[in-house]
Amino acid sequence: GGTDAEKNTVTNSGWDGISVWYGSGNTVQRNVIDGTGQSGVTIVNANNTTVDRNVISDTKAGIFTQNGTGNQFTRNTISDATDGVYAQ
Image 1: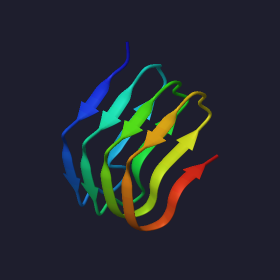
Image 2: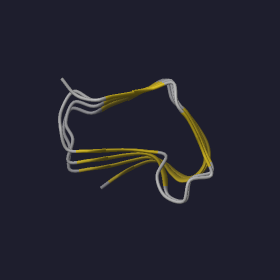
Image 3: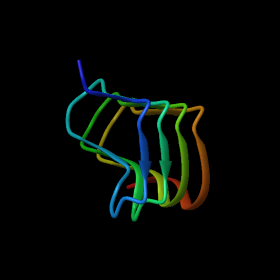
Image 4: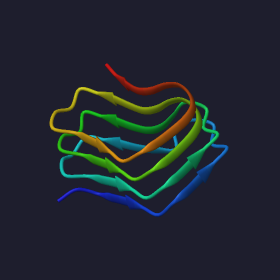
């Protein structure tokens, strides 16, 4: 399986709130992310990652994803972000 990031609070970070690079079957859920310099959640080269029930605010992108397949974004609340979900 993958890595789980659950029930964290991230505030005023200079970069991303939570980053997932590579791997498969990761879960990012029930986190509060506020005031990041870049993205609330970043997923790069990771497959089948679930991002669920996060509260993300005051970011450039709420969720940023690049080069992955089968990723699911459900029931997230994103506010005060330049982009809600940015896929590249």
